[in-house]
Image (cartoon, rainbow over all chains, first blue to last red; front, top):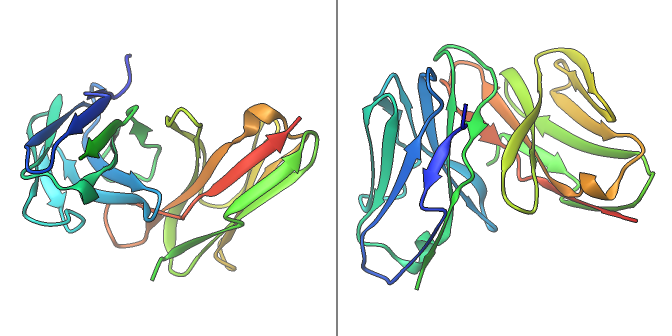
Length: 115
Length: 110
């Protein structure tokens, strides 16, 4: 299996532009997580899905952020409009079995820079 | 308030030294994971613990549920162990997500 796939790996954009990050979870995994990592705050959960349904989006900073999971093999995280403080590494992770405490598999991350 | 605390934040060791990284949490958990993040950025899971002790090569992880504390030990440390080590927990009765410690940045000098 190719693991969790994220695209793009790097994104540089200007303030005010729309940014879309993409994630393909491991086939057969039922839970998908979006995380943000910054030097100041470390890893933070933004939102997670169980069986394609958003369960907890309390970590989404504000209305500029939105996430979708239209099917079991694809999810997007969109920022519109982007701001310099959104600069961070965004990770997607997936795991099997919704009601379990097992390993999460992380994608390589998308490094976002907003100028 | 962060439910998960790690110490130390930064650690520098000479090659061959025994290393300990600590993780404390303030509420009940269902499981605790130790993650490793290399300078390239990728995050991998090292251990999952709900009780006792696990060993993989030179890495040993322990957990004391009563004391709400876990340790990650590295024996005979090597420069390739240089990475950020992150403690992550599943809290009881709070769903399916990880709560993370702040991470420990380890540098092993040859």
